[in-house]
Amino acid sequence: MHISNKCSIAVHCLVFINEYGKEKKVTSELLSLSTGCNPVTIRNIISALKKDGIIDVKPGTGGTTLAVPLQDISLYSICSSVDPQAIDKMIGIHSKPSPFCPVGRNIRNVLDQTYDMLKENLISSMKNISMEKIVSDYHSLLDRDS
Image (cartoon, rainbow, N blue to C red; front, side):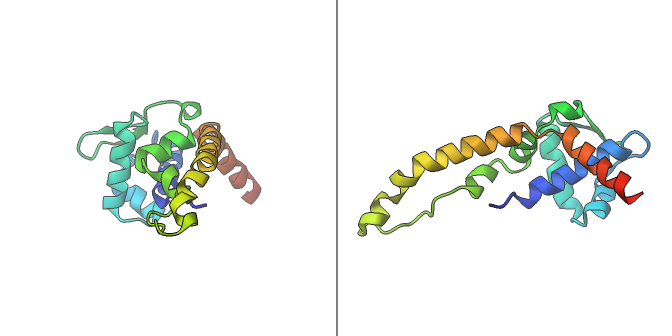
């Protein structure tokens, strides 16, 4: 399975905002340098996170801050903000099986129930992973490197 790059970039941005947002003016240009992504990509991600109330953005070049505590931001809320189709992209059924083949004609019905269960389990797991845990993991890595 593959989690969208947008989700990973958004998590990166949120860790950066958490770490530096109180001392520095966090802008899309700064986040672009940290992530290695185009500033337009960053602005689109920031816009989606803002729309869903995860971050606050001051007008102009005011910077970005977290709008809610880390423990209230789940990996699922991040991914669904920046890539609403992320789960369906991870667990999907090919779109054009042959209607002339017995397997092709029935494969969607065969897989729907199983894939729905997988999606529910994935969503539940993603909802149980908070930014608080991700930031804690980040700090643990920093402590090991020191």
